[in-house]
Length: 112
Image (cartoon, rainbow, N blue to C red; front, side):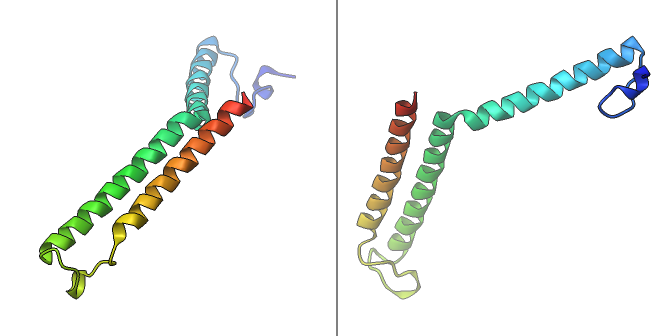
């Protein structure tokens, strides 16, 4: 076999400078891949990110609801009508999200 037929893409050169450049490029690609895999495997960071996003969505919805209520003088009705008592629903959603996060963390620790 020849040196040009041994590479994975069939175009490997026997020139040391070209080989070194290809090795550097491959190492850089491998490093990026390892970083992406490590980020995917970091469950704790992913859970924190997910919780942060949920908290931001909740705050945005609460702000929107407060704006609608203040534009109606604190009285539901008209086009900006809200449910009679949205606070317990939002609280239950927050509690459920927190419970899921705690359960996932406990399950992860038990696996170790």
